[in-house]
Length: 245
Length: 295
Image 1 (cartoon, each protein chain N blue to C red):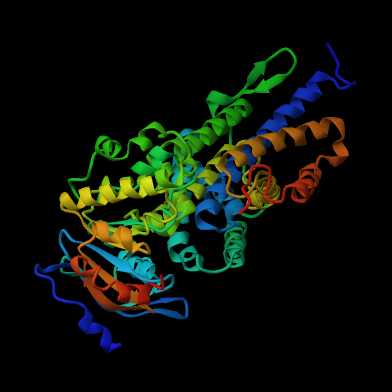
Image 2 (cartoon, chains in turn blue, yellow):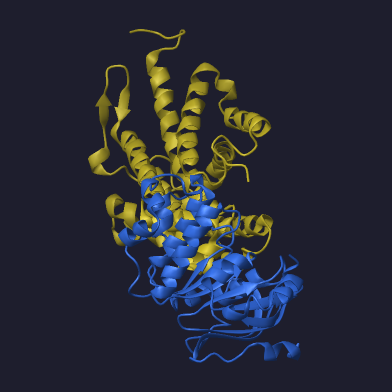
């Protein structure tokens, strides 16, 4: 497990999030085997890897919804590995789950207003409508009646209201049309300009390349490499080998 | 006077009113069960005992502290609700990761203990509780005599049921509840205190049962077994309406009360079993219940 340690290069600023030797389990099944990564404030970092490599589990461990996890997860200096997801969210981490997590028993508006404010300075509902105008016209619809793209926008939009400045986005482009993926890409770029810090789980490294500063390669429950975005093209063979594309 | 199918209207409307009264209790009780099951995934077999507690608490408030019916209507549900909060924090909380069966067994055992304690202390012959002075007497509607207190029971339970429905379906707190029912993990990951919601929901469900108990005290005598007799029918109502459906619980509660009343008029022999016959048919045709969602 120690061989994975050297792959994380120190970043210039003090890391906002630092994950060290993270292990996690689904029931009896040991799925993370010592993940190491760090994210500086204002960075957009991706986790790339195959299905089942442990990307989603890493996000779930950071937000605290994995049943059993060990190691160190320091967020703004606070050790969160023993905290409940509720306490972790309250530190200012916003979670956009895989499959978007839109509630079918709530209207679009209720979905949007559901996550409570955790930090001051969140976007107003009007600002979110500016970002995603489609949502505004469908406020009274049942949440899951929206199209996949609209659900993804709602899932991101509702987190922007909370004031969380550190976002975990789990495959926000999965199954969406290219025009919607572009819109999500522009949104991520805009959030980065506004100072948000983002961990993005992606299968699509072409998309990841357009928004990220650095990429962590995840394989079999470990981070096996880190590639700065500028060097992504040079490492294309390595990527293909890891992602199997 | 006119007659309908050879039935005198006094008998018809009398039974209809009786059905509506029973339906009022079915509705409040099955509503509480539905709210609890929705969020806790526990079939609260203590519900009948908690309804009985409501009636006893109002009796104790009156006879020991001189506190009358109207304050009781609020106080008894609060006291019972607090006991529910304690039960949830001490016992139920440990069962959520286990099979339904454990919650059912635990709450069934609690019901037996609570009923046993009350029977031990108060006996099983029943204690009287007077109708409050404001609601004695009744109205002659021409075709029937309507006792004021019975009209009040129907109105009060309708108001409480609709208010509960409104809070759950139309308010921010209700949105939290629905979200936590649908996906507790994600709801908690947004920073919402789901364990607290669960505790308060159980307390509220118990409070509803106790409210029904206070309403029942002046009609039926206050008796340790009053809940055990009723709860079996209420479970049938919940099965017919569909476990966990709020509106389903309310509509089915009132509807079945009325059907039961009408059966007493037209075919009295079946009146005690009609609800169970409907339950069997519903289970065959629509196993998730009339308003239930199939998982």
